[in-house]
Image 1 (cartoon, one colour):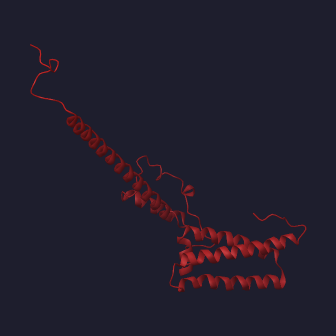
Image 2 (cartoon, helix red, strand yellow):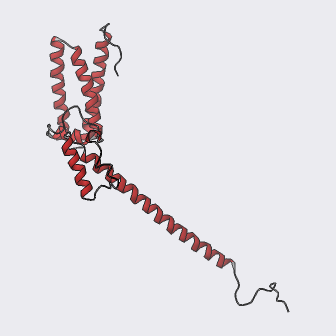
Image 3 (cartoon, rainbow, N blue to C red):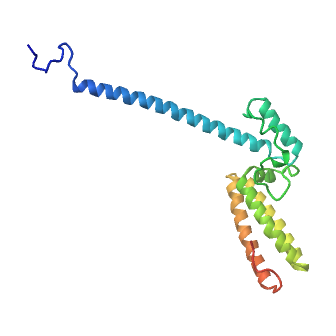
Length: 203
């Protein structure tokens, strides 16, 4: 005689609660695999970021032999991955480099200079400022030229005074640079406008 449940064997009843539990288990398992995958991806990104920083640190000097030795040391120490030997065999003149200041960071070991060399924003601002300054200096003569040099030396002292304020020296220097660039650009624009045979553009 057929049972009322359509002939299914008695002894186990699959309920909605069972379905909920199974769905929860599947969801938890998928989440675990997802978390493991995400953690693995994050680890790879962190490793790549660290290696990129090590590479830029190794090649930030100006001496080509020293840069090559630094990279080879990192590879030998296992801190850089170079399975195909691409870094080891790279022409040292093609090594990447960070944005550099307008002066030699290796020779100038003053506190202000080293801070500028360590901060990419300051290095960029210093290079822009120097470009406008020397361009304006080249267009100046006599007393104007003398006054510009004296004014620049005074500004350098004001820039370096950021180290003695007790606060973030880099943000103070960045502000000094931005103001100086605006001033030099204004002077340069005026100088070029008053010289008919001088290019009117200031890149």
